[in-house]
Structures are given as C-alpha cells and as structure tokens.
Image 1: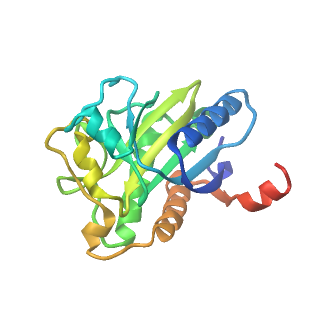
Image 2: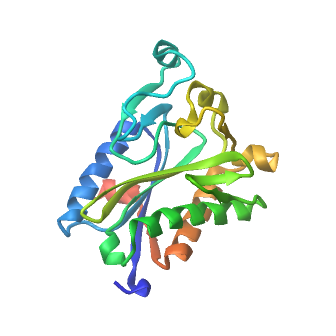
Length: 230
C-alpha cells in the first residue's frame, strides 16, 4: 500500500479495564488477519494493572504479590513483547491494530515509529525524548517515560506504547520496570514541572502518529456508533 493511501480509525475509549481492551484487541486483530475490519488505533487510560510480557511469566516485583494485591492491582499475563510494566490512570496507552504488510512496514519500523511519535509529542511540551541502545521505549536522559511492546500475528499488530503523562508514580515502585532493577521512571508532568492535560496529549499523539506513518487519521464517534447499534 503506498504511504499516501494509508489510513487508520482512531477510537478514544476513555478509562477502561485492561482485560476489556485486551479482549477487544484480540477480536480486532483476528478480524484484520482475515482481511476484515480496518486498521485501528485505540487510545485509553487503564484502571491500575500490572502486565507481563510473553517471555517473562514470573513478575519481577520489588514487593510481595500480596502487597500488590492489597493495592487492588491485578497482574495479567499477555502475549506482547517486553517485560513487566504498569498501567494506570494518568497514562496514555495507544494500541495499534495494523496490517503491516498492507502498510509496507516492518515490525521494527512500526516500533520505531511509535517511539518517534512519542518523541514528537514530548517536543510539543519542550521535553527532549530519546532512545537508549538495548532498551526499547522513550527516555528523558536516564529516566524512562514510555514503554513499548507488540504482538504480531500474520503481520497484524496489537498492543503498543504507554506514555506516562501524570500517573501515580508510586505504583512503579512495586515493580522493576521492564525488568530493570535500577530503572527510574518519570512522567511528562514531572519533566515540565506543571500539570498537563491528557486529552491534549492524546490529540498530539494522533497528529504525530499520522505524520510519522504518513497516514490519514479518522476519529470515530463512539457515542454515535452505540446509538446506531454498530
């Protein structure tokens, strides 16, 4: 597919449970693999949850599992790449269900594009994001601000990238983020020293996603879809 004919539908889901959106991704990925459905970008904030990458079924915690449970935080095994991470309110999570073959895009290109999208978002707030050799995601100096992990089946992606806007940073103290015992995690609000509106960050993300991947983005009105029974 030539770059100028790429397009993606954007769904802003609001605050969701992780399992709910995980099941939605699985359905959309299965449909896309069968040449049904469309390329989709899901934007959400999750209720607190810790997720594990497919190669790391044992959670790399700094506390006991009982302590995590006392926080009311579930630990969920997933099929994505990467290691342990945390999702919660104040974090923008972007999941792409994309036919890479149709986009003439490699897996590495897509991961790098997600990182580049976040780097561009950070620049909108005057923050310099960068990549680190040997560790995917986006960093500000030696502080990790965004984590990325994908699952790809028959060239169709699911999962994506999580950008810390203003989450409860104490929840990251429960884990060794991405399996790195000495990793420091940061947020956009911390780096700019003031509150940042997550909706504005989401709008910036969609804009830069379209620019990075040279694709048209189309926002889907979920209220209208529900009203019409779609």
